[in-house]
Length: 106
Image (tube, rainbow, N blue to C red):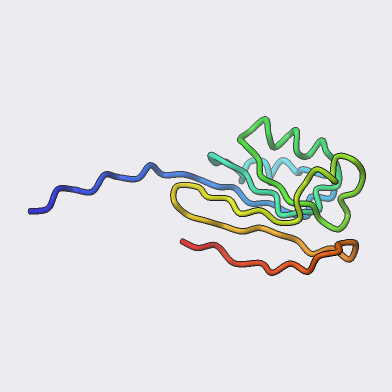
């Protein structure tokens, strides 16, 4: 009989986008998890601060995200959590690059 495989810890990832500077209480309640991914159009750096108070945040810049704070956000990111990879990106009319996005690999 083969030894039992080690159980993987369960990891939760909350995904949100298009907050446009507004975080509704219902959205915050639904975002429980070990990590949060914001897929663009944050609208305000305070959104990042609020999300970061709940869990580590990975965010990409959306087409409405402008200014110094937004310039620090990547246009695409690949996040690996618990052995699973997910690429999040946004395309912007202001971008000089054409991005190819992949879906999550589970």
